Length: 245
Image 1: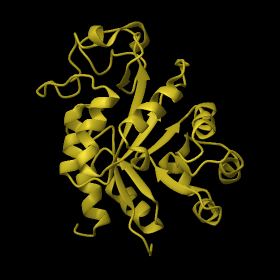
Image 2: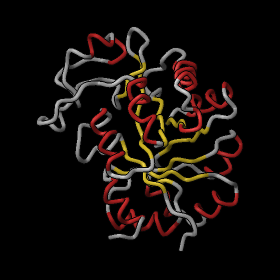
Image 3: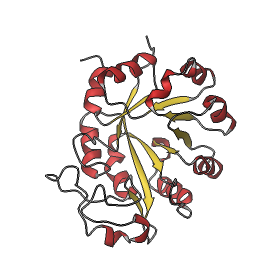
Image 4: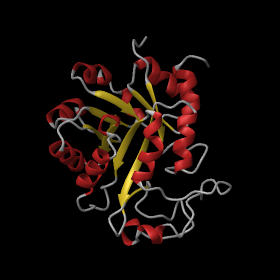
């Protein structure tokens, strides 16, 4: 049995119950007792940091087009509640999310979306905003673009950084240590590799695992002592981690 309790991080906020990556989803995550939230950032045409998962707004909003091709004002002409039409929602700026979550004490896992679009100076911009909002102790950064993660680490060696990845890499723990990260953010199914969790522990790497929605998988992560369980259902995970369910 794990000695320490796993943290519950709400994936794009409480995205099973509210439009993903919106202030409502983050507010709900806090109300449900999450320890943190995971979110995604992109840059607008006028250099604003906005919170949205996709490089385009088509899937989650009433509009179409690329985030990079629109100003914040243009983006805000649309509604971002396509997954929950009954709940009004706007695209938030990262500043607005910081302002909302500052009083809550929640950790914020910022995924920097530079896999498709190489946003110019996004690493410098998010570090500067985090510092301005005095949230350095509450933020960790991750990305599937490992060049972005190492750049964050170079710009701020004190920043908490983690490599996001899906499936297949060989010897990720050694790779993570070699590049100076604090954590690995693997997809759930990577926990099947023999000795993987133990090696991460031995090398001092935190494990923040996504996206863990099934109760049996939440229990598995809890019992393995996974550091953070990233889930769309923070209320369900909270109950399982606290053993009240």
